[in-house]
Image 1 (tube, rainbow, N blue to C red):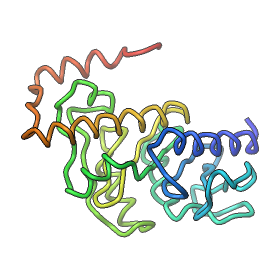
Image 2 (cartoon, rainbow, N blue to C red; image 1 turned 180 degrees about the horizontal axis):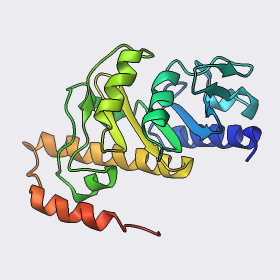
Image 3 (cartoon, rainbow, N blue to C red; image 1 turned 90 degrees about the vertical axis):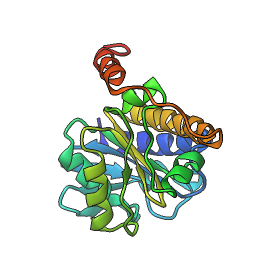
Length: 211
């Protein structure tokens, strides 16, 4: 696939992210892996006003090619791709319910079996660090160990998938579960699924969906 075609896909995913309601304005960002690096949304631009050519190539060495500056969060995209070879796309949002939980510096426990879709018995919350910094990137990579999603303290959420469609689907699913968990907390907190049952669910998720 040409870089221009991938740029168009990244922009379409960013617009779909906002259309779904899990992100607003120029917040959040989207990227897709390509040869020797990745294509990422630009910093501080409304996606409705962007063209495909506004999406920016960033090399794994941090080099930049394009007519715009990349998202200020490009470092954690780069480091996720470097640490997780299965990651083909990354979606980061400031969705309302995931961010509300992240502002409490809490992850999401196994209140619902679909938590297993993110790779483990829970979704962790990464430690807080200033946006755009290497410290934030390091915290996210640690929180994503054995997972494909995490919350970001006082910030939002990040997920990765094998491709852009899967990454966006996972982001929507995580926001849905975040809302359900938040609502259960208002009722005094949910009862959690035991570890042994979550282990069974995780095993079943190895063959979940169309293989």
